[in-house]
Length: 101
Image 1 (tube, one colour):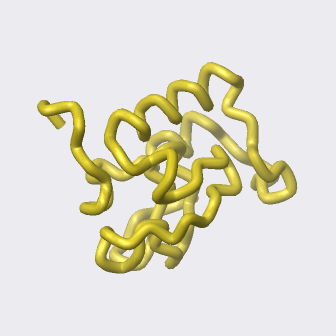
Image 2 (cartoon, one colour):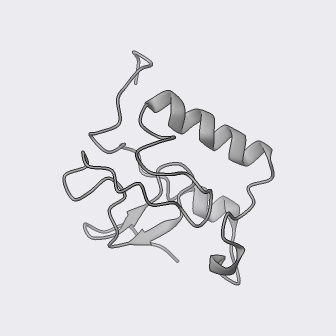
């Protein structure tokens, strides 16, 4: 099971564990433009605004939450458990465009 520590990161769209890989850099402001193996979001492109994160997540879920790279899917994967890993705070580099977030 994934546990969040100071060195563990998770995709802020789908909650996939990323280990010590910081998708928006160690400072949270420099996107890597890497692609999440699970939801397929490109960090720094589809997620550069809060609305983009929410829209991408909704689209991924409504399309069946399929893995972008199925070979990377853990054997006993649980969508419900993974969604619990979505960080409560977004990286600082993601622009808040919704006013209340």
